[in-house]
Image: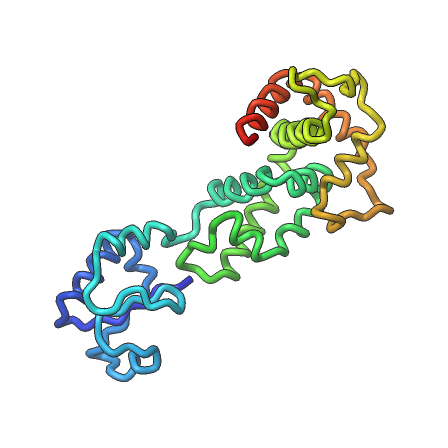
Length: 251
């Protein structure tokens, strides 16, 4: 999204608009056009009076305006790209919020490009579509560079985060299929990893059938599934209690 303002230096509302943009930190990233110097430029955008402020293609200010409302509106956006640490936090938080994405990254961290090439997903889930400058292309390149550098180390140090989202969703599936009973026990929860768990994890790494290559599951699928299973056994009582409690609230 881009911000573009039409103002005139003799207009008190124009000065008020510039002051609001300065106060909120958006003046530097707003294209400001002084109609005293460019008298014909406003016509192509349908501007008949000043001040005018465009957010993308939407005219959000025309003439007098409510300063408080504009400040609240601008608070929904970011003037500049966040730094690398915050960018990666936004990316990984979105990835861990979805069982398919989390499972896919856990099983195929080397295939992260499959996620990075989905521009709509990246801009929406990281909320970086709210950045005013730079362009979407530069934002996406920034995300790609940050994730490519940061993800390998993160996957080594923070695997427990992936174990948790996978384990909780597995127990949730057990609950909704009637295999996790109301007191938190489960007759189908064996000490050793069941044969169907790696297959469940593999199919969970996709939305529908998207992303599944039945001829090329990860070579270490059972090993990775085993790590999740060990984590699940350790935290079973805690997770089962939470799932049952929240399910009852929903009911």
